Length: 352
Ligand SMILES: Nc1ncnc2c1ncn2[C@@H]1O[C@H](COP(=O)(O)OP(=O)(O)OP(=O)(O)O)[C@@H](O)[C@H]1O
Ligand SMILES: [Mg+2]
Image (tube, rainbow, N blue to C red; front, side, top):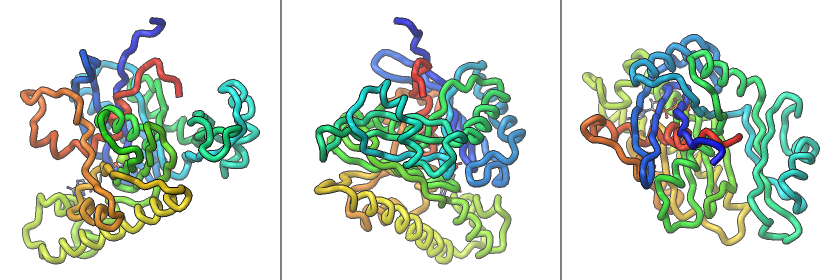
């Protein structure tokens, strides 16, 4: 083997929290070595752009110190309006030929100046409609965004080995966590603080990906306005930690309204995807991200889409020691770690 297959440190730089996951490759799978979450103030990352890199770097550093992680290769992810993932149909050609035509072809699919983006593509396979065509997945990411995230990782003493996209990290997580899933088409939906990432997978391949600018922060702000409380208090109310003097009926009503808003947007996006497919249905939805815990969200999604929906458990097949990790905390934090686990499952020899 040319490369030693080392795992990478999974580093999910979210708008509200930075998540770190360290896995070891063990016989028959993976084992959790370390896991941590560091909160960052809301003005640090706005619209997924890093506004305050010092705080981001400090938070990564603190996590590394607390988890006693030695400096090494890490994988991180980007998402949002500066990242485009699109499927296109092109004439059959080799990987090499595709690389050559990439700059030419991509221009018509990507609404950015081609000189400002990093481009990548994956051949998905022969087109279903025409045997002389193939489906290709394009990924374009603004260089500035990639460079900012890489710099933050580097300034925290880690080696940015791989820059992934949130939706693909979810896909990696799904493949490892649900290897025996009988469904052919599933949707992975991550509801974070400012972003909902959606990836539809068919037989192990992404066929549709979309980010929606919406998340738990709007709900926190609604609670702030409704009860005249600080951001911190509103966050606590949300997780049921500081509800003295709070009208439960009112808060439940706010949760219901928030769930309806999220579900409406997710449904609109998935319905759009379904309208482009013939005789295909989504058979299951896995929901992750901190905001998937909003009471009532998953049952409402299930009902409105008429598709079974469940909370994703990225530790489904990963071993972890219940003497080191508190099972109650693990059950709580699991869905929020979906992207970080997907990133930690990447290998050092993988090239983006
Ligand atoms: N128990 C809970 N109930 C409702 N919301 C919750 C709960 N716990 C966390 N959240 C919300 O989840 C969000 C944080 O989730 P997550 O860590 O997945 O986001 P992020 O990755 O930082 O953000 P993004 O991916 O949008 O950049 C916050 O809005 C937080 O208030
Ligand atoms: Mg996130």
